[in-house]
Length: 276
Image (cartoon, rainbow, N blue to C red; front, side, top):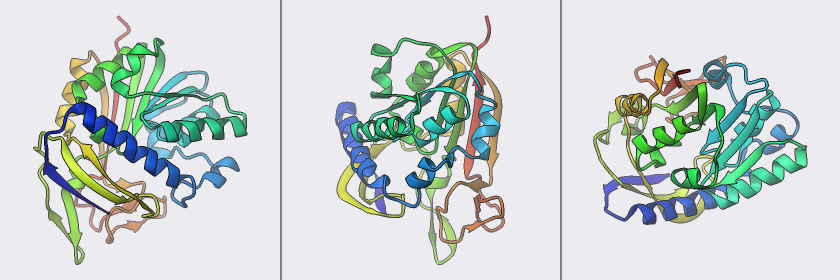
């Protein structure tokens, strides 16, 4: 699907522009994939799953800011569950699609097109919950600044909730049923990635370049603490929302696992802004 990990030195602006283009290309294809199931969503299926709901909790009547929301199915799902939800994404195409679906379904979910690092220039509000999930943080070039921005949007007592691909997972490849450690966690980046297919149904996309930055559980925990948050819960889980290796099998609860659970596949954080 991709080739990756050659360290290069483009500017941050070049990286952001390339990634915005990449997510615009993905957004054009993702509306018509089994992975996202837009028609099922329109017919009432919510896309937030058990892990996310366990971490975020009851959202009835609460304000929720979803960072890196793609085309907003999870954001709109939080609205259906009772939140006053706002979604933010870098991609013009994704936000346009999100707004169109929300309008079609009569949902009051709000969407904003913005680079997260530029968001404080245009959004000046406080929220009960800041949420992000699955493959968002790897595109953040400054994790400390990301955490500062997320924390700045919280009301006192509010919480940042993160459900992410565990950072060790992309370090492995599978060959003939054997997992092999292929990449290093300790690459400062930006790392270059050549993309010709999207993860959703492995649909072809126009070949393009993207850039990513590796992070660790420790670096994210430190960033949240330095942003003035208290980490209330951190979980490393042996199952995932989708099949990332051929040897993974789907269990009765709908999640995917590796034989013998050798690796954490998902990591979650809940971090709270102190009342005082």
